[in-house]
Amino acid sequence: MVATAHSETMTADKALAAYGKSFHWARRFLGQNMGIKAARLYQFCRVLDDMADGDIEHGPKRLVRIQKDLLIASTACDPFLILFQPFLTKQKFPTTVIVALIDGLLSDQKPVRVKSEAELLSYAYHVAGTVGILMCNVLDCDNEQSLGHAIDLGIAMQLTNIARDVLEDAGMGRRYLPASWVGNLAPEQIITLAKTPDGDAALTVTNAVSRLLTLAEDYYKSGITGLSYLPLRAHISIAVAALVYRQIGVQLAQQNYPWHGGRQSTSISTKVRCSLRAFGTLRLRFQKTPPHDSNLHDAIRGLPYVR
Image (cartoon, rainbow, N blue to C red; front, side):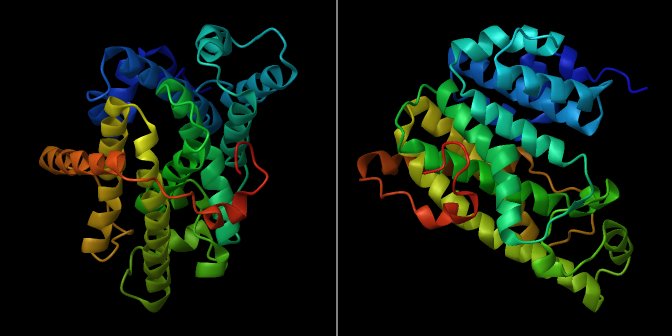
């Protein structure tokens, strides 16, 4: 029996501070009202994630029930959904997007062996691009043109997350690096290869991490381009979050992609430098925002809010 995870009982701000350090840093630029809403959304998504991972007692079963209640618009039965229902309703979060998020989280219940880049991008949309859509509601952004960029920023961050956690994910039986890049490497083999990171087989993983971060850059570029659709304080805050999180990939690249080492993190001084650079993105507010690059969504066409 798994004990109830702290994320379900913590306040929204404490959950953000404990589990989302980059986002907690960026939250200070949002202001009180919007910051509270953003932290609450983070807590909602965090608890769903913990349910999927089994860190909360009966988590996967509860998650299936929550999804069912959302799909049939019935009276919520799960106490967590009952608690958050007023918030979800007030923010007018699209149910189809939350359902897609849960689909992505539940997919991690099966052995994860991603086959292709398209499958990787679909997964990143489900677990993070959806959160980008939900954030638009929290940040008082109702311009439909912003949605494609919001999805892309979520995807970019998720690709960075996967690059950072290759070994950790392998320890949980998951391989998100596409087979089209690394062959049919099993997670157990990745763990073994980490002991000889300079070997030819291990370099296949290193090259895949490099390719993953190169792909992430295309989505970061699109996500940052769309910041001008946000209110001013939201623009600054999301720019900070994006650049701080992107820095994880930058550091991995600078160190020749040490996926076999410990988890990469950013120091306070690095966060300060990224925050200062974030203010440079304000120039986008004085430029015409180019149309969203629809080619970035070829792999996810047809999913909720993907144009």
